[in-house]
Image (cartoon, rainbow, N blue to C red; front, side, top):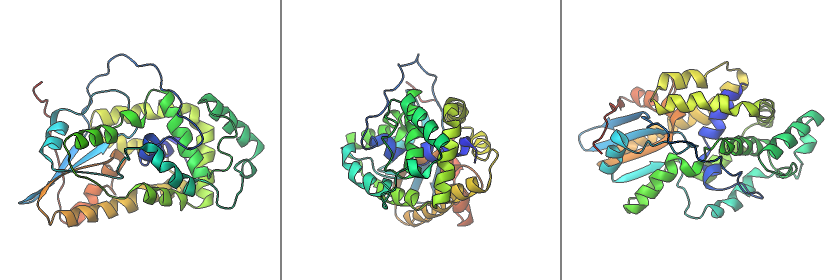
Length: 313
């Protein structure tokens, strides 16, 4: 399992819950110092239309720095919408998520993580956690999937990207300012159950690869962020599918394929009612052969790419 796919699956596909609610028992690693002004990003946007319904599909990069992106055709589409729908609604009080996170993230059998790892893996986990400012034993009662995801998110925060600057946070704030209804495709608890349902062998393989390659996060995330910022969906797909093995394919089916099919069905049903909806989900769900758009096409619903247009200041 290559870390590029793992990083995308954890830090991008399901990171909003880690970005909006700090993991239990510790504070988030402080972000890096603010960098110089970043160039404008032009991420991809699609639209599905019929006579009385318009649904925009926006692919987000859940963990982001301060680069501007909420402008041009993205802002125009959002302003024209009367409903925001995301994978999960971000709570106004992030601390409210901690009890439900603990319910799924802690080992139900009371096993320690250290007892499930080799001496070498325990040493590497200690080094990795210390590097992001976390005590080496902070996660000893937690499941491998949660430790892997949290380590990826905290490592990303050290690079100056976090859920606090992510599109979900920005869109939620904009929607609440407009008193705009906010809906969700899944919800945080469903996402937690999904991760907790991962076979133990897959969780172990995921954590093993995270420990081996966590120091490469900058090199892995940078090209993904660049592809997202330029709306280069083909490049994003290539990075996601890089050197996949059986574990990668199993993780991809769990995180992307099955959920994309569910969301496409939701969109198909929503098209039966009039209105304009702005849907924001992780960019990986809108890329590749099993993307939401591909599933929609099989149901005779066409998603068209919205051309990039620079809006007047």
